[in-house]
Length: 418
Ligand SMILES: *Cc1c(COP(=O)(O)O)cnc(C)c1O
Image 1 (tube, protein in one colour):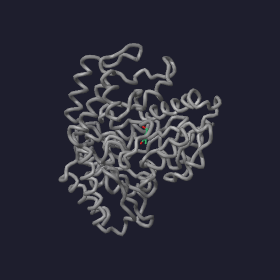
Image 2 (cartoon, helix red, strand yellow; image 1 turned 30 degrees about the vertical axis):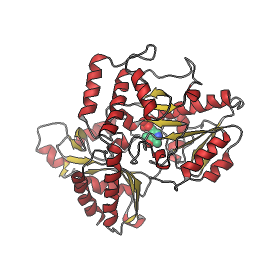
Image 3 (cartoon, helix red, strand yellow; image 1 turned 120 degrees about the vertical axis):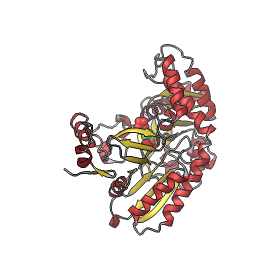
Image 4 (tube, helix red, strand yellow; image 1 turned 90 degrees about the horizontal axis):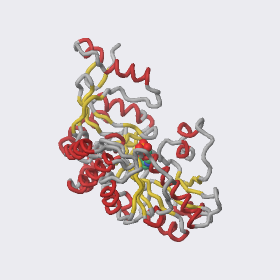
């Protein structure tokens, strides 16, 4: 077998190495023993440092997927490592049966960081979205007198909010949704970026509008300017909660702390995850007002690991790092530089380049190939990224990437798009 991985052939590397750990062997074992709910690209990573990762055979790659935006600080950032190991030595998990000296400051700092009053900690993005849904429903029944089991939540076509049963039930991607039913009722879908459709969809039973300010997995879809402001007005006027899923767009990814900041709009609730875990640990949360989050009574909701001291210490370090290293400004500067240079390639294969901050989508012409084919070609050049929808190559490097590192990447993009 001569499979080309990164810059070398796996078969060649395997025969010249005494090690039994080869790319091919790991891929074979993973496929055999781990459910194939993913179809990974053929890079078997074993080490990461900053924006770089290495596979088991020593090939080096530039990580321009960055864990679907979970690795905004790159791999193994020293500040994250320090915070995590210091806390790990003291106390990792207590469960919420007790208080902890880390959740207290994390809750305060995260609430203030968001300009909000209160938070509810979880682990993954999907769990935070589930928490937001539960909050909105109980809020509707207890504050808005919506009849029991009648609460409606409005969502957008092309949404991505995670993979739990309730969430995939309102996905517009057939593969995510079909065969996992019956779908949880109570969700109404409208086109993305259409405030008039939102206004029309609202009924007396509407609890919330749940949306991504920029759709990430849906293809890096940026709504027209003014969309967020209109949403804010409509939600306020109709007493509907405006819930921004900023799991991917939050914490500097789009050049501001939150993507909602582009229009100076404050939702009623932020959903956070990915970067909040600093690239080292799953940390998520919903952050909102005291009025809204006080719908919860002890016993209403929970998570064994949510808000554990290790997660809290990691979350605190992540917020601090974002501010201390001025990563929002870097996100704007490097993101615009990257898009300008890619547009400047004038490649006939590229249909369009869009993005904000360090969230970029390169849409390729159908005749030139699929997004996946370009992603494979980039992998062969030592660049890791991933398509979103069929024709879009998503590029979301760590926010700490330097201009030199981007230039290294751009040379390779130029080759692939030539
Ligand atoms: C990734 C993502 C999620 C789900 O997060 P998980 O940690 O994978 O559960 C939810 N919403 C958005 C917008 C995301 O990008």
